[in-house]
Image (tube, rainbow, N blue to C red):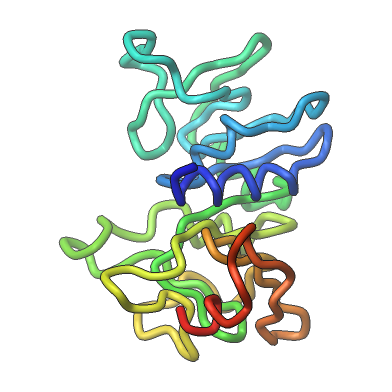
Length: 200
């Protein structure tokens, strides 16, 4: 299984029946492909859609049905669309049970940096600030390293998304929580040792 799929499938185990869940751009969108049997969740996209399903099969994408990053999505029976004001009202009003976001860095205290100066790594903040501040639970999905450098750092060198600490970080190597602002290893991926996590 590819690293991104490992991350997404592990995060899917955090889903509970009836949740309203926002999936960010990148790895988070893959979580919809791994919803456990018998679990029914409502995926929300901040561009105004509740009821997104798995990524469409090749040739089945509709150009007008996309997530917030412009990538094709499917709509499940009963899905609804609405404007950005309603969408961000849900986010800012604290109605999201869970948001899953990508990350560029997460520090030892659980603070997230997932945007950069416009024109650099990603185009800008997007809805991430609102999502981190408004969702009841925040999970970050990211690969543990990039270009040989750890993305789990003592202190973020990139701009912080929010001062609020995330609840859970899932990488292809480990699951890390942040009780009382302290990075705590919850589990390692199958076949991965604690030493390998520390080395990365």
